[in-house]
Amino acid sequence: MSLPRAGLLLAAVILALYPLVAAVVLSTPYEDPFSVIARLLALWGYLSLAIATLLTPFLREVMQVFGRPFLSVHHTFAAVGLLLPTLHPITIFLRAMNPALFIPTFSSWERFWLLAGQPALYLLYIAFAGVLLRKYIPEHWRWVHGLMYVVLLFAVIHGNLIGTDFENPIIRVLFNTFIVLVVVAFALKRWRMAQKKRAASGRRSRA
Image 1 (cartoon, rainbow, N blue to C red):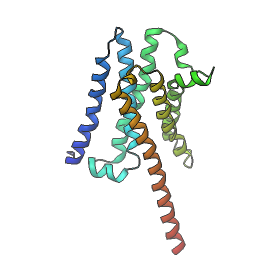
Image 2 (image 1 turned 60 degrees about the vertical axis):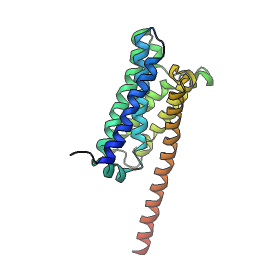
Image 3 (image 1 turned 90 degrees about the horizontal axis):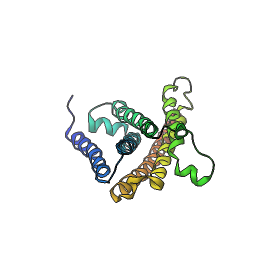
Image 4 (image 1 turned 180 degrees about the vertical axis):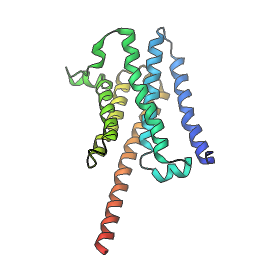
């Protein structure tokens, strides 16, 4: 099935973000290829997770625009967003050979946020597990999966505080805009869910 014209345009805009980010990363002077790879993995992974999250309030619209079921589009970005952030610390570990990189830091409030990418990785897998366990925790899996919003918040704070590429205004504006859009998407999704509950309650009361 071919994409509708609107889907092709939106897909082109989304996909253009990846080479844009790569161009910014590669334009920064570097000596260590591991650093470049790790930075790209982190930024591309964040992009994919943010896009997957932004789509969640628009189930019907995604189907109309892309001509595909929402879950197929959402899961494509989510899968990339799960893989690349996992490879990010592994790449750094291969350079430093320090297993402490995988251990969240709680020694101080400031240091926790500087290294907020560490707990974000574990929260990412907990959020992913919520989907796998939805059959067993039908009333709670959405709240577990909702930790993805916390993951994105932690990751962008981590990037703003110590991310090399966040010194570039393109990356800083792009990724901080994404977290704002994610917050808006979260609010919109909750509002739509509340509207559906009120509508369902009204139908039951009239029955």
